[in-house]
Image 1 (cartoon, helix red, strand yellow):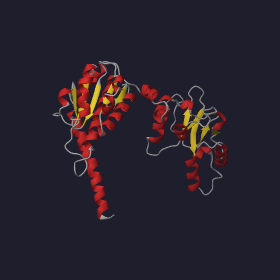
Image 2 (cartoon, rainbow, N blue to C red; image 1 turned 60 degrees about the horizontal axis):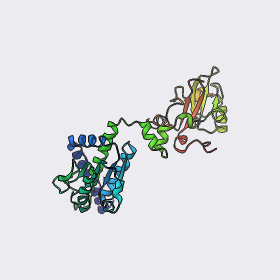
Image 3 (cartoon, rainbow, N blue to C red; image 1 turned 90 degrees about the horizontal axis):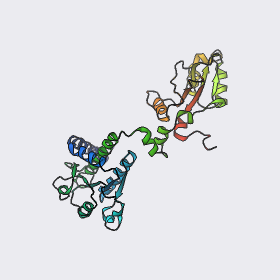
Image 4 (tube, one colour; image 1 turned 135 degrees about the vertical axis):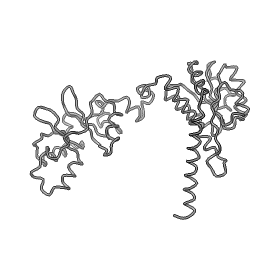
Amino acid sequence: MSRSTQEWLAVARAAIEIEAAALLRTAARLDGELIRAVDLILAHPGKVVVTGIGKSGHIARKIVATLCSTGTPAVFLHPAEAVHGDLGIYTPGDPTVLISKNGSSRELLALVPLLRELRSPLIGILGSAKSPLAGRLDVLLDASVEREADPHNLAPTASAVAALAVGHALAIALMHARDFTPEEFGRFHPGGQLGRNLMLSVREAMHSGKEVATVAPETSFQGVILAMTERPMGGACVVRADGALAGFVTDGDLRRVLTHHDDIRALSAEDVMTRTPVTIGPDATLGEALELMERRPSQISVLPVLDAASGVCLLLRIHDIYLGHPKAGE
């Protein structure tokens, strides 16, 4: 690595460290003003309007998205367009969150008297508590930083991250105050993986019946391979005569046996199976199944599903969680 490329890495790491330090200071400064902001928004059951211009406008849009997805209706207002008809989004009393690094934006300052006419309580996320805008607010949330992350202290980097973090803190505090549940979060995200994981149950994505390879403990190793080849779901349930699950065999188990045994003719399913496999019930969510499969030292790609009512062993693959059941469109 050349000296110049080492310098690039050093500058990049320093930028992240500066932003991280700014966030820690921002968190330490949170105080009763945040509580006042939460109380103010809860006291006005309509929507929250978030506004900012330039880089602060981009941050405002992200905060709107977070508020909406966590139970607080919100919209973005472009301050320059507001005076050309967009003030019509307001219902009198809607709170406004104004975001600005310096608190001196002419567009935002011009909005204040108009918003007062609309009886809009004003919450600021500002980088300067001594700015012209700061003195005109009902609540001031401090997003000031000691310096930006670039070597010349110019680009809004640390200040943008701090403002976004304060907006997220406000959204999460509101989420907690509203007792916003994972089920509600899922309803607001029906088209994404998060919503799918929260709203769909294992029962809606699992494989059953003839799709699942099922063998007896005494089935030969060759018989296990044939069963898993005929029903290629990545695993086979080893089931006793009384219907109880004796163990589980995965594709990985087959490879390990073939790697460590020169002669497989004497082996049976009972010899190669995992006797206490990780299992899940059909009424669990896909998110819970994903946790079981991924949050472990050795990840698994197929999960036995035990139906307590029938005792039947079913299968859920990680592909079914991310891609959907192959028969879902039929």
